[in-house]
Length: 266
Image 1: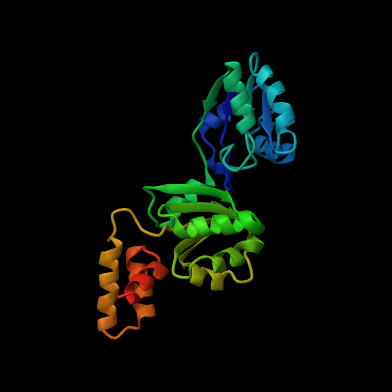
Image 2: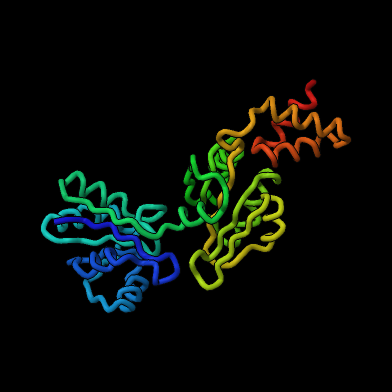
């Protein structure tokens, strides 16, 4: 039959599509991360179907069995919220179904990264989705270094209690948007620099967080040499090199350190 990948609301229960509701009603089995959470969604829409827990701790074991069942049954795959596979389980099951020749239908619908990107007001032409940052160690440092050098807009998830620390580790002048509790009653989108956001969330935050970070240079913006000349003009007006570089960074998207190094090298 088929595997149907069904996005579910990220907060507001009204954000489910008519097609998604039909897919859930028609499914012979619904694979979900948390049967209690999905059960509440189904109960809200008066849907009574069999559920099976499918999460990061059992997906490797269950994926082949579910793919085999999908040969004869219609199986729906949902995450706790949003679109499955986006920092959620599901990749192994989709891959197993494709390998087994089972039809895979993917429904469009709610996605926290896309919602945050649009709400951020930052460039959305080239985007890198990072997922969750490593909590500590070498991998975290490597990823933060990549973020500092990345030219595309980045979208990542962060836990509420680590948010302030992460913001403080980004270059202070970097434009960011902290999107909290999207589509829920206490939704908040904070737009500003990483330094401003680090002060705002120094003691952490509540709820689910999506962090959007502007890359080092917006596509189509001024080149680095043109930006250095812009900073040099600010110095001639009386700004210190450091302040001139920071001002030019805000206006161009280039990193302050890169502008400053070129500015003082001459």
